[in-house]
Image 1 (tube, rainbow, N blue to C red):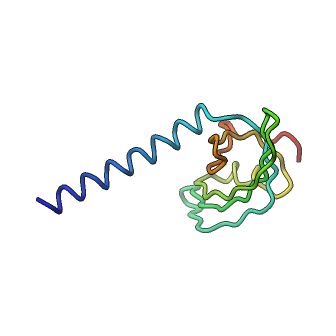
Image 2: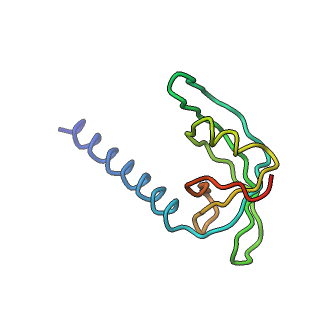
Length: 111
């Protein structure tokens, strides 16, 4: 019983974490971000699946101060090429500036 309840609570917490990320990626504040650094963590070429850690310098569109955030993303080869250091991409982020997500489709504003 206790194990089942613990599992249910854990699943509920994970659900709300994913819901928060989904809402931020879809409806978060908009801005642009310069890619400062990119590191490939894991790559499976046969399935075009790449886990990458990206360091963003975000400039919000609403005039708030810039901030830096690091995110781990799951991307394909085309997106990996666009996330090259120095490129500027469109992003959405939460109001606290804790999570940054590139917009879909991933658009490079300036190489």
